[in-house]
Image 1 (cartoon, rainbow, N blue to C red):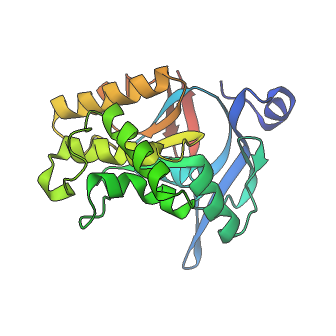
Image 2 (cartoon, rainbow, N blue to C red):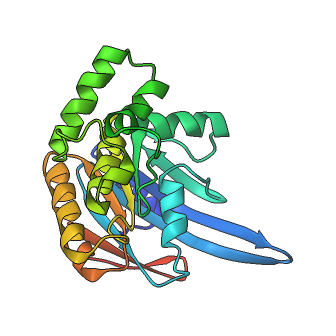
Length: 238
């Protein structure tokens, strides 16, 4: 439910994974200022599945960057998993991304020289997991996304849908508080895209919070709620 900033402060509690209070993002473009986000207040409860939609220039990509701690608000407050991350420095934001957030991108972003297993294990390496534990967990995640028999394959040996499944498994490796997906079906045919969305639905059914950016209504239909943006503002939430 969209609330004003005072309502957000009064009503948010530990059931809310994401709390945005009057969030603005302003970019300086030469002598002009661009208000990419113009004052957004929003609660996203734990276990939600939210699709962010809107035309080009509506602010949905900026919104996802802020939610993913890839950028900071110009003003306003962002609380993620009970921590105010609005003004953290780059090092702390990097730690938050590693610990709390899983990313799935349209272009998969797998490392071509690494196997399926090694791609999935990459976040665990940065968290200092030992090799045996990391190998076991990567195998379990690969099986979860239906690729338990492809661990030794490299991305070039996989279909687009299989590569995106690897990307989902990698995003889940650190058991993130929230899974952020940016047009995750954009490079896939309709049938394969639906398979990926079925996978997201299963993950959400198991309790994972998912926030998805998409311009496709049939993809957004998988979500529990749809946030429609226009001109840096929330147009509606249904």
